[in-house]
Image 1 (cartoon, rainbow, N blue to C red):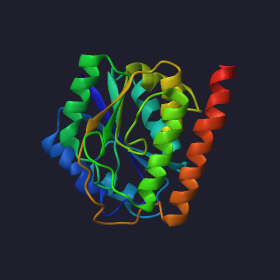
Image 2 (image 1 turned 90 degrees about the vertical axis):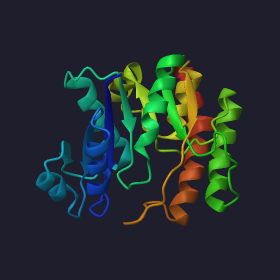
Image 3 (image 1 turned 90 degrees about the horizontal axis):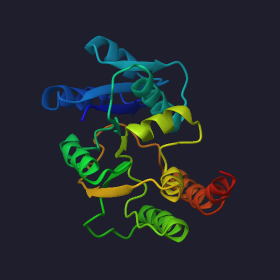
Length: 232
């Protein structure tokens, strides 16, 4: 399987070299692309200095826009990619699980494989995990599918999904899109992974943003994506 790792990065000057150098040294079988999402720090400069393969977006588009830019690259450059991986630039995702995810995709003919923290392990009780549980319930109510880690940002998309995401502005890398895809017949499975703690930089999701995100995703899954499906 020819695979492209897409790494959206916003203000990741303290992490990006560690993430990309690890891929280059230990996982050369995969192509990678850093998408610098209008960072205000030295992320782009580091990529240039180290000769990384990267797209330098002039403005901040957010995760959805940055990831879609990476998939546009995968789809339109003629690289012949069979799949693309959404991979965080903060060092939390472990690339050792990519092979397991890709193998399951090929074996089961899947459209999306999610790197799940809770496929086989119990979900802890916390305010943030409450939001995760609410989104899981919304997906279960509207699709009948159980996705135990719907907020995981480690996702592998097959060739057809790369094309869909590249061509459709409504396909963001979010749980509501996963719910919509399941309702339209996409085959989605999870693989148990371990994720590492961020050791540098600051996460976008503080308490307020985490609550807002949970509410927005639940509303989208239960109402807007249902309407979108009916109209489709």
